[in-house]
Image (tube, rainbow, N blue to C red; front, side, top):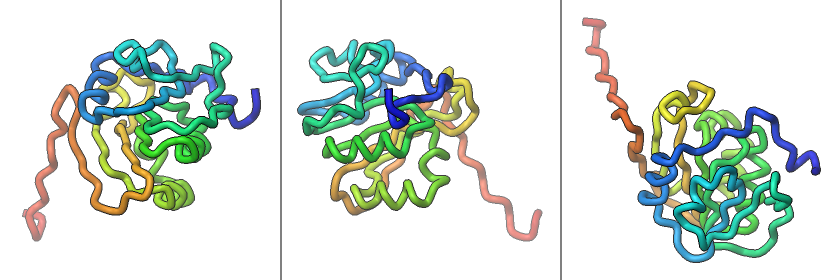
Length: 173
């Protein structure tokens, strides 16, 4: 196992079935799809024809070189940037379920991703607690498309609707 593939033990955050189904229904990936972090099979049990990798089963995503239409997964968060960069080398469409701060807090990552293509859509799932994850950060499924230049759509896939905050009145009234 190389340093690029070695992930922290906290990276084993399995995708709940309700969330996997929502992502599949919302993004509808087609063609040759790769699930590079199969884990317990949250996505591949619904799409058994997909290609997959799983480090624990001897299939290292960083060894994958065959082009695919989509990379669709919940990646190891501690390796998000190298994981995205490898996804961008092999796929036309990339959809990752991530804590949003892991993307937006690093200018280098945002710059590298935009060289691939802009974000097409972000589907919000609330906080990690909403998803059964051991963190409180905002969680979203982010879809990038090679060469895309355009607006980013947003939608809410959380079980509980995210309530918008009303603006404060001018003058503090």
